[in-house]
Length: 362
Image (cartoon, rainbow, N blue to C red):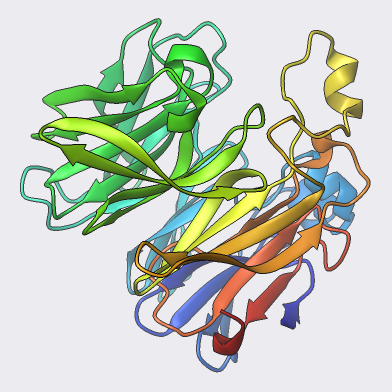
């Protein structure tokens, strides 16, 4: 393990050689191989980003900084920060004015679509919001800078929100991962530019996921439940009937993951039960949910052929979950390097810092 940067977030790979990071309202573009700084891009962000974010616990409590990102080209990327979606061009240093999609709606993750026959190329995301009453939830596609269109809407009473959209070129489809509880938790399949969206597996925490990878053997995913035992699983179709096959139990809910070639990485989180009747319970809760086996976060590495093993772990710090779950985050985009770059969140060691696991540690 190598500690690279304190209080800095790796957000996305850009082109064939660069890594974009973020700290206190400034983007840092590094050469991903040498980690040499290529350039800085300052943003006109507010007092909170420039000053308050330097106080780590304020930063965490207010969820400051870049929440998610995705490359647009070899020199530009889209990202979500401060309740808006922005775009940056690293050649011109231009930052878009940003836009609010809808009240309370944000992306948990962006998805790039390229070369799927029956879908328009572009950047997509599904609406992620607090939605206990299961109001309608939409999927959005980027048309141009600061222009997003709705391409599909789940009607009222179906889901709470969308965790991720998984583009599957081999099967010419989108897999839609939805949450969170009862019949809202599930996996959907979209085809023909969202003209057809069908339920695949629904209504069980075994089908609640935030991370999935299309593979030759099926859709590889890890469950995301603070309520029940979590596992790495494989969605397969047998004679047109979908089944979820158990591969390995894991010690916590999985919100983030990444891949390097045919090796997949699932990071578990430490979180509370997440269901509170009174406001003060949210601010003070430090008791892990029943589906979280201990106060360690783990990274599981492997594939369907070779199985999965733990390659790294860290302990959750002492602060309540209102100061964020214990987790590891990875840069978006394609990792072309034989090393794993990740950010610590709410860890007892190297909190809010970026580290590298070398090839020998994977």
